[in-house]
Image 1 (cartoon, one colour):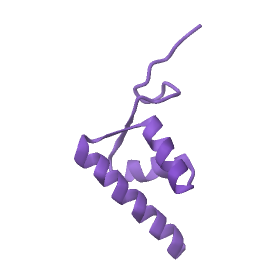
Image 2 (cartoon, rainbow, N blue to C red):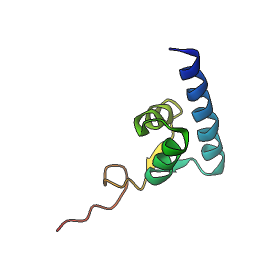
Image 3 (tube, rainbow, N blue to C red):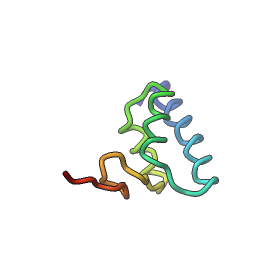
Image 4 (cartoon, rainbow, N blue to C red):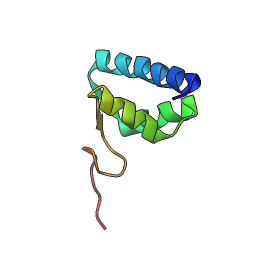
Length: 71
């Protein structure tokens, strides 16, 4: 892993530790917003969240605790 990738992952970890301190869950929308702010793929936010044991909630796709609407 490159030095830049290490710095990005460390920054993500720091931001997610703040989330943990505030309640321990991360909404899907917040994860996507963080990814956009940092200019990284949402998958990277998810990978780091998994490493930290942080749950993603209110999934916009209905996969992780979000509501599924059926037509």
